Length: 103
Image (cartoon, rainbow, N blue to C red; front, side):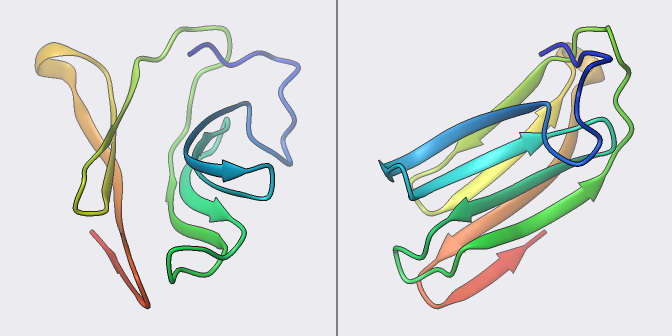
């Protein structure tokens, strides 16, 4: 992913959608100049809408960032930046019906 100088400081510059149900019900990972967020739009699967995990993280403008999102069947979503020995865990959240667990 490459963030641009025209990115909005108020919103994401990039977003990956998953668990898509319809235009008002889906889960996402958003990246901006200042943070990475994991969350969902709409209430479904026993989980309320909103940002579930936010990690403050500075991202350079005009440079490519390798962003890996791993989605597991047990509800975990894990976000990583970089590659090879430079890979860093950025954030994680487990979507569970009626409860939340971040680490």
